[in-house]
Each structure stands twice: as C-alpha cells, then as structure tokens.
Length: 209
Ligand SMILES: C[S@@+](CC[C@H](N)C(=O)[O-])C[C@H]1O[C@@H](n2cnc3c(N)ncnc32)[C@H](O)[C@@H]1O
Image (cartoon, rainbow, N blue to C red; front, side, top):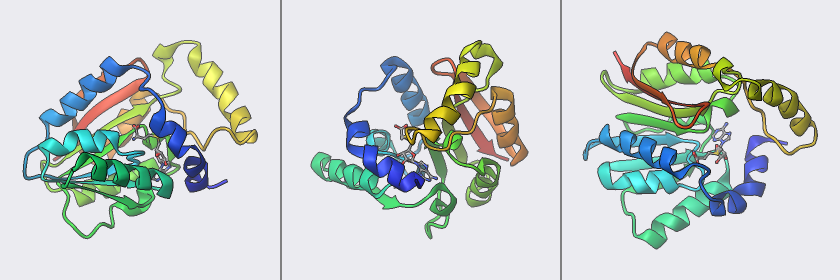
C-alpha cells in the first residue's frame, strides 16, 4: 500500500484523535512560534490535518501545509475555511516534491514525518538548498532506536516489521538521536535548539549557515 493510501484511510480518525502529550505538544509549538516572523513564508511538510499549521498561522506571513494524503489536505483546508484562516494554504505533495513549490520559503517545518520517509538525508539537503542563509528548519521526529529509551527500542524493532506485514503500519525508519542530529548537521545546518518532548521525540531547531 502506498503512503498516500495508508494515510487517506486513516485521515478522519487521525484528525479526531487526541494529542498524546498535550503539554509537550504545546511547549514545542510555542518554541516554534518564537522563531517565526510576521513576514515569513513557512512550509510545513507532512502537515496532516493542518492543526499545527493553523495554530502557527497567526505568527507567520503565509503558511503552506503539504501532505502526501489528499484526505489530510482536504480536512486541513476545511479547517482553515471553518476557522477563517486566510494566510494558510494546503497542497498535496510528498515530502520529496514539497520543496518544488515556486515561492521562496523562510522556514521549513516537519513534525512526526521524517521517520516515515526513506530518503531523509536527501530531503535535509534539499531543505538546506531551499532556505535562505539564516533560515530555520524545525522538526520533531520519533527516534525509535535511541538507546536512552531502553527496552522500548527492541519492542519497536520487533513490532514494526510485523505491523507492516499486517498492513497496519506504514514504512518507519528507526534511528537514534545522534544519527538523526548527525544527518541534519551533515546537510550543513547548525543545531540551535535540541530537546526531547517527550522522551524519544526529538525536537530540533536548525539554522542554515
Ligand atoms: C504521523 S502523521 C503527522 C501529522 C502532523 N505533522 C502531526 O504532527 O500531527 C504523518 C503525516 O505525514 C504524512 N506523510 C507520510 N508520508 C509522507 C510523505 N512521504 N510525504 C508527505 N507526507 C507524508 C501522512 O499523510 C500524515 O499526514
């Protein structure tokens, strides 16, 4: 099953689901907001049903949410219309195509998405090329083979292939904090803020040198 079909089938349920750790979510959302300027064009990759993009839109010039799932994009556009948010737009695009957007972009966001792509190192390099010097790349990513999460990492290693065989999980890459941060640095970024919110979800603010 393609990623698009996988997420299309789950979009309405995902959009209705509760955030697992609200205080961690709110903390990283507000940290992210603090890096935005009122003139910024912000591109969010894997925006899902658009909640974060719509919440951050108050502090950006324009926010463009992209997602491989047309159902997710439809829900996000419905929410923008219902909330009267005029400076957010949503498009169907895989992570690998999202950067082909014609408009210049000041900030790139990606929350809970980079463990779901097979070529994240190439994507980080593309993000680096797209951003201006000083531009921010802000992400939060589950690092499922991070040693500090203890035995859970072995559970993920065992369960994910099984869940994929049963068709109840998409492709999921497993990597540690060090591998993840190394890949973002390797693309050329400086890491200016790093933390775990919660536990294995690595929040990283990176800046183009
Ligand atoms: C776990 S959800 C995260 C959604 C949102 N960013 C959040 O934090 O709630 C992953 C999202 O990534 C999208 N996605 C998965 N693979 C993708 C890809 N290759 N390109 C773009 N979006 C993708 C899915 O459709 C889904 O909306």
